[in-house]
Amino acid sequence: MKIIIYFFLTLGLIFSCKKKTEHTEVKQTKEEITIPKVKEITDPKETEVWEPEPKAVTFNENKVPSDAIGLFEGTHLDQWISTKDSSVVKWTIHPDKTMTVGPGTGDIQTKQHFGSVQLHLEWSAPDVIEGEGQGRGNSGVFFQDKYEVQILDSYQNRTYANGQATSIYKQHIPLVNATKAPDQWQTYDIIFHAPQFDTAGNKTKSGFFTVIHNGVLVQDHVEILGSTEYIGPPKNEAHGKGPIKLQDHGNLVQYRNIWVREL
Image 1: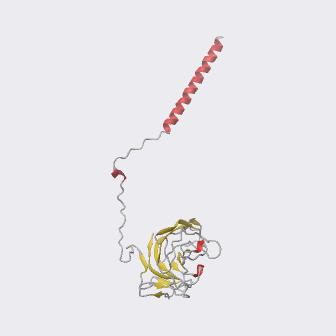
Image 2: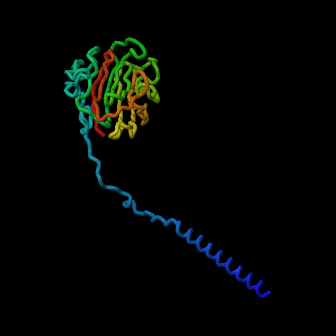
């Protein structure tokens, strides 16, 4: 009988020690994951950051920022060359500091090559309204000679939606059609973030476009799927910086006040 009593007393002691050990482990675990309290900030100066101080920019009479590169200010085309043979541009400069596409002379592009940029340009449809769809006031601005933001007289002029004014050609339809009547000037403000490639030629990061047309957001940080092809899907061949190009599509599209800021 004593043996039986001794057995149960021993068993109870072992069980009691086990429960105590488990309780201690749980308590320790809870203590280990306790999140310390964050110090309450009561002084506004503790969240003030003073450096680096953003550089101040000024503006000239044409509202061009002082850190911009002027591409066309109305008097010459020294920043541009012919795309097809690098010769002198044959587009026409007018006394009112505008220029007109020279139909049949070919596209023009900047001598300087760019990566990610902010581009401002103003354009106007031809003075005489002719054609319809893609045949009416057609041109385009290309980034790195591969990615086109469409220029087209899309005022009361229906065409395929991913080919109208401000479309990322054949890729992204604009959110709205903000095109003014053809007797008025159109303004494009474009943010272009260039795609990135590794040393093996693989794309590691897509590019993006944001486009504001006449003060209206029409492309909201949309992904560039690849080159904007007229026929077929986008291509993603590796490349570095490239020129900004304006297209000769055979229409007398006019331009003025073009500048760019490197990002």
